[in-house]
Image (cartoon, rainbow, N blue to C red; front, top):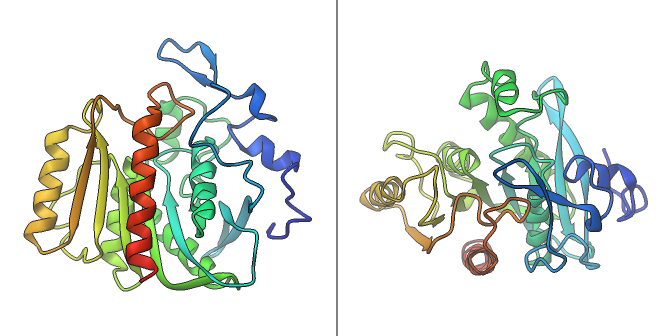
Length: 284
């Protein structure tokens, strides 16, 4: 487990290689367009904060039953006081840089951000969506939720974490699992933030008591707007506080600057609302 700055300094090549798989410096980061061709990322990405000097971030590992799984953690550098924590649930491999960056952005906002690697059963040899899907075909939702639970338990062991109130946010299937987790472990979760979450039914969210803030683009090609509006209706009908923000002409993954559908204006606004929501529900 790597938790000390001297072991995981910003220039640590192991951590650099973790980000986006093989990206060693920001200058060489690329994204892949719809036609599969590599495109260099813009040099001034307004939501990228991994180089912020006031935070520490790096790979960690923790126990999950009889095995050890990994994750990515970011925190404010100062350990003089404890910080509230937020779980980050990825909808895909956590090596894609926007997931560590989300943890880092939480640290910039004064939180400890942890992305547990719920995709740890995917071998490095799996490169295509079909290969990744095959590697997790025997995993049940309970398996993913247990991974998340192990991450939450790990946070409770950290001296710089104040774990009486936790937030949880997720992307796509990770947004769905964030809500599932909050419904099952409602005692500890006090804020839930799904970005374009996968479909849910009323029974799955019936025990979800924590306030929910949902973000989605109106041009999302994977999650219909009507589906998210129905989710909002179900939450409000059962008495769960829910607010939904739609972003005009934003597509699926608009917060992920590593993807061609990144929409900076929407990403900035969505993140501002995210931090305000966390502050309201975790720091009061």
